[in-house]
Length: 90
Image: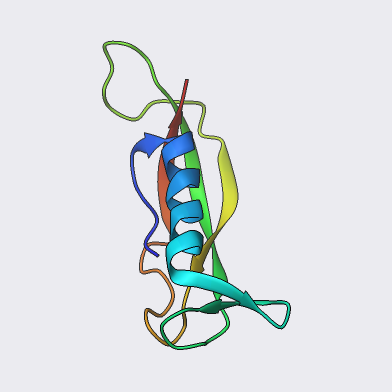
């Protein structure tokens, strides 16, 4: 899964939940890819937190950065190409 960019925080989290629901399943206490059976891995992405300010559509904020794991199948996809992204919070 490639991390989304310039989206509200709830959309970023929903995309991860959708990925897990549609492309993964639990087998023997592991989260695995439905397509190939490989164990799903996670990649820590640095997310800059930006504030949604009316009238300012561009990214703006304090510069706070958080780490969030992004799931991916090492066989079907490989690790995400983007190592950083941003989320927008109210």
